[in-house]
Each structure stands twice: as C-alpha cells, then as structure tokens.
Image (cartoon, rainbow, N blue to C red; front, top):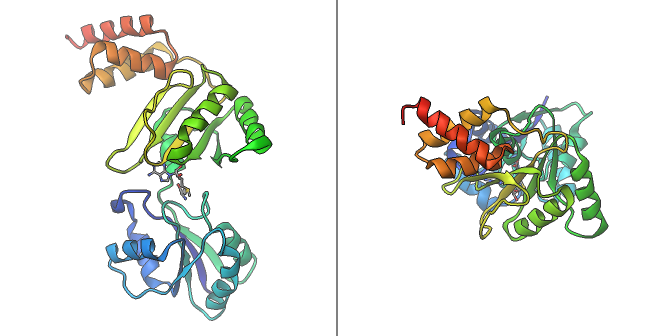
Length: 276
Ligand code: SAM
C-alpha cells in the first residue's frame, strides 16, 4: 500500500525541520510543492538531492491529482509540502488529500510547525477552544460578515495576515469587536525579528508592518480581567527581564485588562517581595 504524506516544514527557522520530515522527503517518489526553488533549498539543507518535484499551488492543485494518483497506484509514495508550515492550512493539500481518501492508499502526516498553533499557544489567551479563520475575505460583504461573526464568537479567534494588509485588518477588527477586546499580534515567528505584542484593539501599536502576521483575538466571552496572582506572575516575569516598573505595569495592564493604577501598585508589592 502506498502513502500520501503531508509534511510540515519550518515557518522560518530551518532548525525546526523534523528528522522524520527529512526521512519521509528522502524516501518518497514525488514531492508536490508550491515553489520548486524554495523547496529545493529546503531539500538541499536536509541533504536530499535529485528529488522529483511537481508544482502544486492554488491554481494547479486540481491538475496534480492524476499525477499523484498514478505514482500511488504504481506503488510509490508521495509527499505534499507547502512553502512554510503545515500543508492544507491556508495552503494547498486539501484537494489532493480528498482525492486519495477512500482509495486503497494511506494518508498520513509528519506533523510540525504551523504559525496558527504557535501564535495561539504563546498568546496566553484561552486555547481550550479556538477558531481558525485563516485569511479574512478581502473586501465587501464577505469581509464584513466574517468580521461580525468574529465579534460575537465566544472562542479565541486566529487570523492570518500579510504585512500590507495588517493595519487595515487591525482597524476592521477594532471597529467590529470594539476597542476593549484583547488581542495578541505575533510577527515573524521563529525568525530573527520574532515579535509578540499584547494589548487591546483600541490601543495596540504594531508600528510600520513588516513580515508575516498572526492575530489572536480573545473571544467575546473571554474578556474576564486576569486575577491578582496572574497579574503578579506577569509582573514578576517582566521585572526579571529588566523591564522598568512603569513599563512592566503598562504592559501587564494592557495584556490583562486590569487598571494601570492597580497593576502599578501590585508591581510595587512584587518589587518589595523581591527585595528591590
Ligand atoms: N501553512 C502555513 C501554516 O501552517 O502556518 C500557513 C501558510 S499561509 C499561506 C501564510 C500565512 O501564515 C502568513 O501570511 C502569516 O499570516 C502566517 N505565517 C506563516 N509563517 C509565519 C511566521 N513565521 N510568523 C508569523 N506568521 C506566519
């Protein structure tokens, strides 16, 4: 029996390529990728040479189905990779998977990096239940309808965005969800300029947008302010990192929804306990 593999690849840091991803990519007979040059660089990094590659992007995925099925039917294995992260997550893969599901062949994966999961798990927002929105529709009714759904969504919402649309999406999320909604905006995850900004939609500042973004928006039902113990733990971490009392209080107030004055007083208490 042959296998169609979905192989996750790094979202920035090549060190995140899993050993099993390398093994599978080295062993398959065909690799479907979005961009042969980009995947060629990854394969060379992994020490894999002379691999048969075929382009599979949003426009060609449908046409690749027959080629993939031919390789599988003749006893070979096939891997799908995207430019970055997990195939099928705002990337090609789903249509080929669907065409193989229900045949005699296996569908499996080498799991690994995905910007959505990394952003969600480092956000500090409720990750018990969440909604993945991917890219919002670009304009019109589709976009406004989706924004309305996000505004009333009780679970944490994860949104992908490109740099040239980041400010507009931030504005639209603010108009839809209100200034008070907590948000965590992550950028360039696993890369040199990785950045995580926490705050409220009304006050968060991401400067001049650069790089790739994931917005993690608190659910409408998750706007409970943090309790004192959580605030103190966050203050302790910020002070340990060398942040000034005032800046630590400002950051933690923005991230936790407690008032600046109260957080500042808690910061003084934390400093006293730390003997500072
Ligand atoms: N399949 C990928 C995954 O599993 O994350 C997503 C591919 S989608 C075409 C590209 C979007 O993912 C970017 O516009 C950005 O929103 C997000 N993304 C990918 N890599 C990222 C990174 N290193 N940092 C932040 N966001 C990233």
